[in-house]
Length: 201
Image 1 (cartoon, one colour):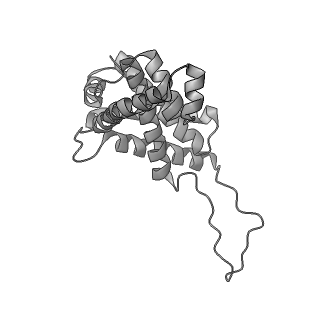
Image 2: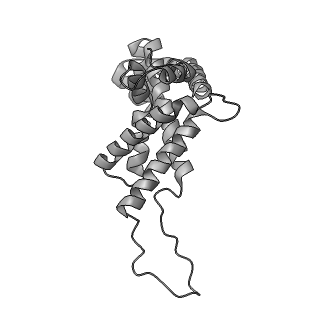
Image 3: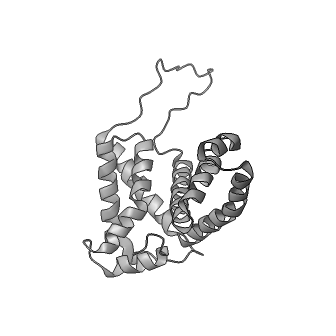
């Protein structure tokens, strides 16, 4: 299946198949990096993040038939977000790997309150940030498939890497006008892809 097929199609396939079906490989390809990245940024080691990914896949496999795909009621990514958060919170509870207390801990009741970092306290912001980064990467992959390599090279250097137009022009041997034109032509295409991916997933 093309990696940009709608999420609803993928979810329908997941409901109808066993865990060794290609649909689960598609799920892993679509969401695996996102889950791993969030787990790592929650303070887990690579090995523990891998465990969270496997546990999440197992939970989705067991519960996918209960998930009702209706974007007006709730999106799949929100449901997935909750599963990943629960897996990470369970990991910290079981391993008793709580964040260390500030040292020295000020116990003076008149002193300003010292907030202790919680690995899942700012979860929604962490998840959303990683999700939109993941979404942008997927959109760029799709854009790259739709345009010529030289166009993408210009767009990537000037728009994504934010290098000066003069520098890009000199390195790629193109005019600055062509660089500006490429951005003007391709930005709406990228934004359209991003909007579609948001609606799908």
